[in-house]
Length: 183
Image (cartoon, rainbow, N blue to C red; front, side):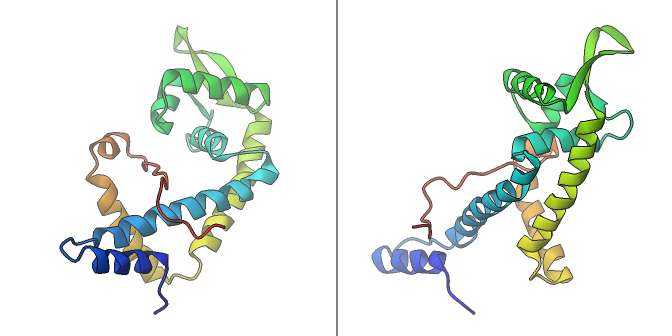
């Protein structure tokens, strides 16, 4: 098995601080580094569609709802885990692009719905194919059994988080100060 940068870090801690157990970093460090690598890869894959991860997330959330591809801003905000101010800003930006529109809620005159436009639906359907191909590229070297095992283990780590249990949506983790191979 090939060693990676995390193995080097763990070995250094074992030499310098044999009184501590850094083994949890073998998982956490790799997840953080992989997350950073995967975010860069997703960003590059979505760029030809003029999308970034947040815009893809909002459009995909609306698309997954099925006809009429609409949600209230509050439902949408909760689904993508944002503050109301951030959600308003994102809806405004997507509306300016012509990918979503705000419409009166047919069930409540005081409320609005955010709905995918036909161009927004076309865009997200194309981008979804790119996104899925990118995801396959990122984990293509894993067998079906390895994928199921890894997915199950990652799910187990995520569901113990109180914010995750409420949202039913993955928590995005940033790489922070973890050592990088980037030069």
